[in-house]
Length: 229
Image (cartoon, rainbow, N blue to C red; front, side):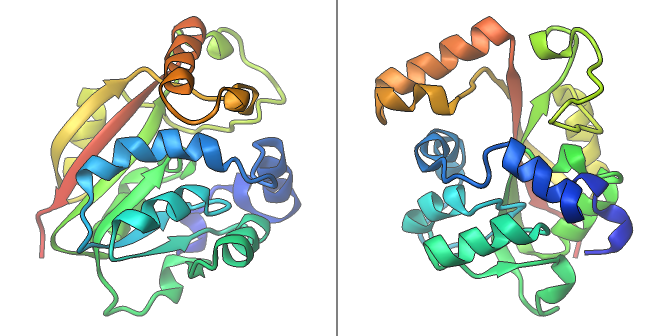
């Protein structure tokens, strides 16, 4: 991955502090079951998959049971090692470390591209890693004025998001990157480690939707297919 397309948030000591602050130093495996549920309908058991920005590998570990194979890409050392050691995943440190002839049936990405300084360039690079007809399944947060955490600027904002999109603009962004949108939908859902005592299943899912409603947190789920050779 070219140096200039990696946000400073992910690098060095600042990157370590970011991932620890986001709980990436802990394995939030149960929460990722909820997030993985949005991706699984768009994947199949014959697919080779790359999880772009896989963090500690928790979501990739869930998806692994439903696809032919999954690898991860994570630029920060600590969560990358967690993913390797805990789940036995193959995790690359940058796109350039993946052989040029290695292509994927699908690339999944969960709340990553909003941290990238040049998202269209990054999406083009991901599109080039897809097989012809391969798909990108991606979720990004909607960070507008309605989300309670966005009412005022905070000097110590832990999220460090650089971009946000509405569905129309995100679809246009995907097209500019050489991907043809198939699905671009708003999703109202959120989860917190504080909800884990509810266990996996309907109760926690409902609690997540209630949390999203209270905090006005929304996401975009997009599925796009590689169109350019």
